[in-house]
Image (cartoon, rainbow, N blue to C red; front, side, top):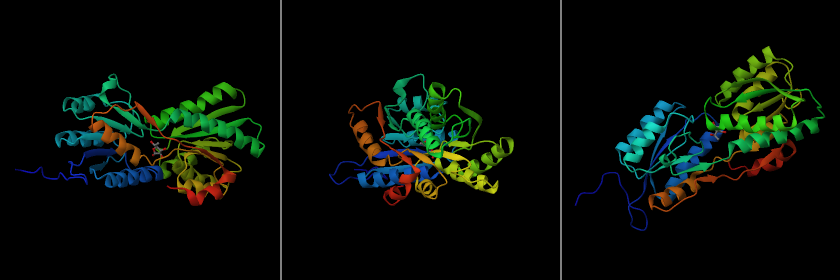
Length: 310
Ligand code: GYE
């Protein structure tokens, strides 16, 4: 009898699950931690993982998914760089009877049957939490307003960029119509280099900014460099709230340069492997498997730093 090349067996003798995973890229500390989590959890679970990095390009993700379909993997998982434009390739997976699990980021689709579940965070809630924690940061710093906010957005069209902005705006519209204003808002593509460059431009066009809301820590860290280069003190002259809670974000916070961080947990690997197995076995799973996370103020940073997992 002929054996399938590349297939392996798991400890209990059953054929190992082959999982095709298309990652967004390696744009941030969050992403590196997420990639490590997926790889080590797949290894731990004894899966045959096919992994590819799309370098933040949708066309690369589409070709990776097509190649997983051609290779007849058991399950496809991917973290979609942007929300739209997936229907065609997802239909191809459906015709090939390969279930698709979304991880981290969501898609907009006309046909909900094109994916089984999403394992990831509630980004709108993260945006709301960022708004709420900014209230605390302002109170602590004794800033009464007017609050002139610069927003560094994530990748244009990506779920976390759209939803974090939306959640934050909800808090503004509900409680801060008169005292808060977003004076500039632009994408920094979730990268340090992007955050640095865009913040430098913000400081030139709007030197009176007193708050920065960054959609991730990496952009905040890049922005800190430009704030310092402009002769201002990050965390004092410009109060900073960001999202993720990666180690370097906590380091910046413990140095007083970031005022608060809303956590977004990247360690999705174990939950993902669990769901993949259930999906492979035809079990029903929840439509959205949410991640649990917390919020951190600057005075908690030093104590929390040693126990951060990513
Ligand atoms: O916040 C950012 C990364 O999709 C939640 O992507 C993820 C975001 C994360 O580049 O750092």
